[in-house]
Structure formats: C-alpha cells, structure tokens
Amino acid sequence: MKKTLFIAVGVIAILLLSGTAVGYAMKKEVTITFSDKEEKLHTSVLNGTLSDALKQEGYDPAKLKKQYQPSQKWDSPIVKDETNIQLACNCSVSLKVGGEKDKKLRTTEPTVGDFLKEQKVQVDKNDQMNAALDQKITNDLAIVIDKIEKRVQKKVEPIAYEVKKKKDDDLPKGEKKVTKEGKKGKSIYQVTAIYKNGKAMVTDKKLVDKVDPVTEVVMVGSADLTADKGGTELSSGSRIAGLKYKRTMAAETTGYTASGNRTATGTVPHRGTVAVDPNVIPLGTKLYIPGYGQAVAEDTGGAVKGHIIDLFFNSREEAIQWGRRNVTAYILE
Image (cartoon, rainbow, N blue to C red):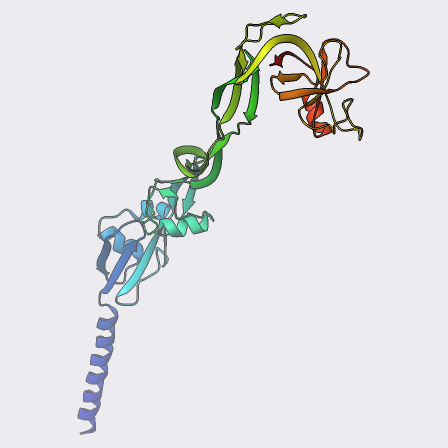
C-alpha cells in the first residue's frame, strides 16, 4: 500500500515539473513599435531575443542597430508574454528657421513637436511650417519654418493746398497780395505689412483720417497805374476802386504810427491820415493809395519831402509790415 502511494506521488511530481518546463518553453507574443512608422510588428518568439524576433520577420538586426535605440536590449531574452518593445529612430533631420541656413541634426524624439522642443525652437501662431507638430520624425526629414510677422504703423502724406486768385482793382496791375494764407492738409493711413523671414510680402494701406487743406487766396492787381514823376492829368470820370480821380502821381510810401501828437491840421491821426509835402500835395487833398485805401493829407513831417507819403497805421507792427513801397497815388476829385 505504501509502495503504491509513493509511486502516485512521484508521478504527480513528474507531471508538475514537466508542466512547468512546457510552460517555460512556450512562445512569447511580442509587439514591436517603430517611432518613425505607423504600423506595428506583431510576432512571437520561443526563448528568443529582440534580434531573433526581428530576424524571423525579415529584418536585418545589424542595420537596425545602427538606426534605432530599443527599449529592451537587442540580445536580452524575451521572458514575458505580450511584451511591448519600442524602437526609437536615431533619425537625421534638417532644420531651417526664418530663412537661415539649414542645420543637419540627429534626434530620437518621436514627433516634430517634441523635436522642436528639444531644439528650443518656438513656433508662433502666424508662422508657416511644412510639417505638423504631431507628425512622426522620419530619417532625412526636412523641416522648414518661415517666420511671419505683422507690422502696423501710421503714415502721414501731405496734401497740397490750392491757390485761388482774384482780381483787385485797388492794387496796381501785376501786384499781388495774399489775403488768406494757404495751409497744407494731410492724409493719415494705417499701413499693415506682412513680413516673411524679414522681407515684406504684402502691404495694405487704409485711410483712417484726413485733414483738408486750406485754400490760399491771392488778390491780383488789375488797376492800370501809369504815371510819371510830375503826375498825369486825366480826363474827368476816370475811376479807381469806384472812386473818381483827376490825376495820378508816382510816390514813395512809408508807414508811421501814433506819437501822441495831433496832426499839422489839428486832427487826431487815424487810419486814413497821411503826411505829405504840402508843396507837392496840398493839405486836405483826398487820395487813394493802392493796398492802403482812401486817405486825406492831414499831416506833415520833417522827412516827408517831395513825392514821399507817410501812411498812418494803428499799430507799429502794421507800419513795419508795410515797410517802404513805391506806388501810384491817385488824387481824388
């Protein structure tokens, strides 16, 4: 009885040991992933290594060892079932950023985005790139990034003013007088330029504001002021600025202003008062001076001799502005 029991226990032990051996000798399922390829390799090995698994699937392990870095050693036995092994491509990549010379680099990063992070290259939202950030890195991949920049600035362009000329019977023929100063206007534009790698590609110009120019008004003399030094007698009915005059005379005019004294005729000087040489123009004579207007000879002066007429102005600035002018004076009726 004891002998039979011993034999039974021995048989059981043999069966258990053989089962373990058989289990150890079973094939292991392996999944191999290449970082630069979409497809996965599914295979099985019996007491084999990564190199064995690849060789039995038709790959040359010697070549792969030059190109890839495995997550498990090439010649280590695969002991676990359903083992996942990653082969990271040590890929050659060329990188060109912002129009600069391209760089030849190597990387084991799986995607373009990971590679750019590795190289510390920032891609802005407006930049243009020939690859997607999630695209797999493959051997001899060329990545080109064009830097796109948007610049906005204001541009001011002047607008020339017009000159409007009007006839003035009060001014001698050919003489001009500006009665309203012209002023340039301006157009204000918003200029948006798109630059690619520092070079302008597209420019948009938009008018955002405008200041109209001010037209200049110039009076142009049209009066026929022919006269000689001694004066010219004219027929009755001749007119200047609507006023009848009996003769003209060439005169040198100057300007003066109030000194606090009354005139030689006892009046208070005002615009229209002129100082004359009574030997040439009698006091009380009414005159018309182009550019000054109507006047009355009410005053005299030590420097006012001959054909000199001194015109009164309300301010020193006006007198200075008038200066010294040669005009034709009209002796009114």
